[in-house]
Length: 435
Image 1: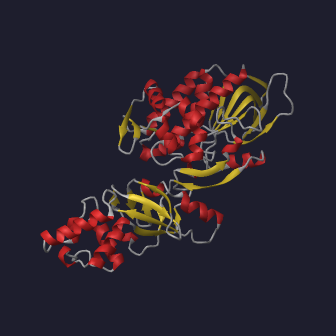
Image 2: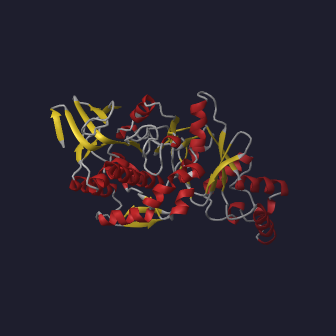
Image 3: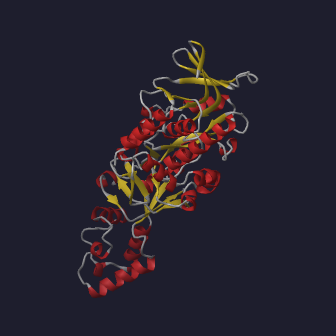
């Protein structure tokens, strides 16, 4: 590394943003023999890593590449395919084992460090980067970057302006500043402004993987109650199912949380962003007995009525339905859930109850916003980025990846997986292009 004067530093590769994607890319590029400077606005690297998974860090998934790809949606999965095969979930686990962070599996295809400490993941990545020779600039916010006219004799193509009157010139620029979720960690959306200045196509960023708010009058009564076995469907005004997930939900005093609801959040946050002030016209439809069909439920009730006598309806249902939830369902139908007996249940009441159990409608009117969102949906259009290199198609020597891109996965380590796979591709491509 060399300096032309006290305010100008030259390096082969500059990385903006020391989050999950940035710290991985910087370390891998340095291991590949490149001179690397990593620029971070906050006082530490990997702040969002520390906050993830309840500070346990769900760092990837147990799924294979094909199963993982499907979870990003058709377009996102297809675009990510090269990166996922380059650095699949199994390779992520091996890499962390090499870094001294063994992993373990958990329900819902999750993978955590054995220690269940997100700080171990962050510390291992930072240590590896420093040992590889990465020069990490903390508390050094990037204020923007510009393409240098022509190609200098020393091959510098981009200049980054860093707060503190420092300029950084580089041959390859890697930009991964994150999105807008958890702005307290430093991700306030600066990257989108930079991309707009480059005239790249941006899909409006909205909160994703975030709890949904509801004005249902009974919602606060269920605060703290969770349902583990449930199918969650997001429906529109007409009742059409937009997407479904078989994941747990948790009721709160403000609405519905848990993976089953949070995975579907973009279907609420997107229409709110596109039509501010208008109701999103969305509802969650909960199938509380996903393992039983309408017919099977009917047969269960009929048989119980003939053989059980004076027995509460709730006692006939699977134990996975909390009593408080069953009573709330009955309340929405005008039934007394506590006193409803199987042998007193009329045919019409029974059919209405079965319909409600298989599709309990919960209106949702918003989300908890970026302050509580685990990721950002939207960002730089994937059409702008070459998925085999992460280079911006229209801007040579510029690589963009991580949460700033318009590709997201559901809860379960999928967004870290995408960040690290993309970072591996970007670092490899940038180093290869130096030679």
